[in-house]
Amino acid sequence: MKHFTIFGNPVEHSKSPQMHNAGFSYINFDGIYDKSQLEDGTTIKQVFLDNHLQGANITVPHKEFAFSNADEVRGLALKIGAVNTYINENGKVIAYNTDAPGFMKAIEEFQNITPIKKAIILGAGGTAKAIAVAFKEAGIETTILNRSENRLEFFKELGCKTSTWDDFSCRSYDLVVNSTSAGLKDDSYPTPLTILEEILKNSKYAIDCIYGKVTPFLTKAKEFNIPCKDGEDMLLYQGVLAFELFTDTRADKSLVSAMREALRKE
Image (cartoon, rainbow, N blue to C red):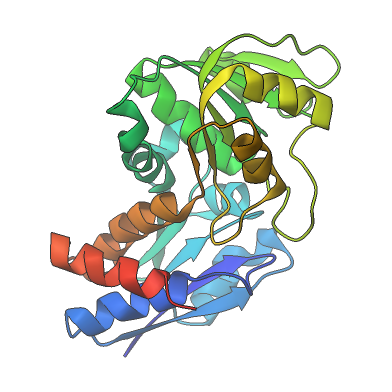
């Protein structure tokens, strides 16, 4: 039986195991997927190999550590500088990023109503990097808003507009994205409330990368009557792409439906 896991801190909330195990069952794949709490991201490659894993997903806050520790990085992940998927190829750790295409698939329902031309991303971590690169590839003008200056250099080089909480000046946006973990374990907002309310007043759509919970960010978006969604679709579609890498299987609609159904179960 092949062994897969998701590395994160925290990770107890993750629904990736039920999604992937349902997929394995659906295609009769001899595999098991579980959760791995990882405190020190710098050890991720060694832990991956020591546990004889065939593949893994990586969630916050280890995506950039996973990038720097991999033996080889492929695809769009090279531009992103963060990865969310590991594959064991004959003892070599190969890394990918399925967050970027997964996110773009997740916002298709918004795109089909109003083409997204301007977006703002709250936060500057690995998930923000993936989304910013995806936006750049799609020709979407992107602003990054982060608490401090120290993580903004990547986004400046990418060609994004960047701001800190102290120097932010709001504009109008087609989409606001919360890429931070604010609201995952507490009732915090991704920015000071006055800034967030100003952004939401000037945005058409909102999406939170956190899933399975109505975060304070989403609650506030609903107060402003903005169409919004959590990160379920992003999780699903990045998971489907990772699943294809894990199993060397092309996911059809019925497999995707089985994985979504499992994701929605308590």
